[in-house]
Length: 353
Image 1: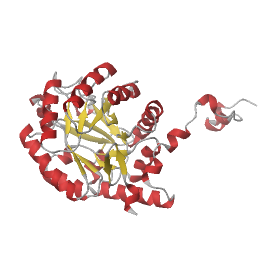
Image 2: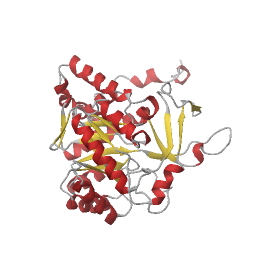
Image 3: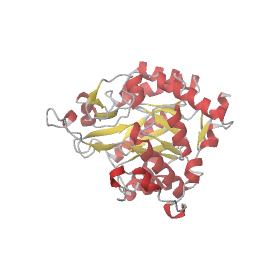
Image 4: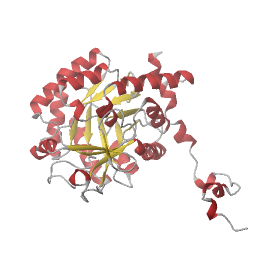
């Protein structure tokens, strides 16, 4: 039954845990409508802020998919195991036009029992607070506050933020949540050893949930040109990031408790991956790069695959949350084994006879 996929983020129910996470495919009306029609439980708009430099980054943006040998592969549905490099920017519309787009698609989303979510990337805190108030006044039901973009160190000064200090996270989130009554979901950086501390600071300051965790910066040299792919350090993501995301979900669940909802992001490409992140502690999971490359059917397929997984185990989606995280043991608690390591080294490395 489709109702078995329902989950809740605080007081907000989602018809299923599959979230169409923001990206360039959600800039124009057609993309937003397609994401809503896909059956996703929530759709997050491409982010905005007041910075002209952040908007200009979109006009400078480039993208690459790299295969296992770190060489470019075609940007198409066949590149399912690709590493994604992006040098992106924010929504090209001015704030008023962007807010109008949000309000129009919120009405469309409500008709499909979908949660439409506007997203702000922090530049100036005062401007973010003012924008958050306008979003609430426009009747939007929830706000994503992105303070974990990967690009701050490479972007124009003040264009976007990568917040890595828990004290600063507390200050920012506290200011925004005090200004509005709608739930605020805070997207955090993955470029930190303190993701759990950042999450604790955000939720203590009033965030309804945290989105764990944004992409890191990476640089891949091109052997042919001897220059970086896309010319610089880029946001890096791909299927391989799923174990890192699941680790931070499990760590954060252990620190904040099972009652705190968490959102997984970065590394999910399918409904099975949604289930994996939920088992690690996520209540819902965002997919973005896979949709950009393979189309909006990725979202529909993810919902169907998650439904099939839950059906075969006679569990509702909410029953998956945190099962693997709660079963996790520390190394010191695991049994002593009989030299298993010997079965995982080259034959020539074994003891001489």
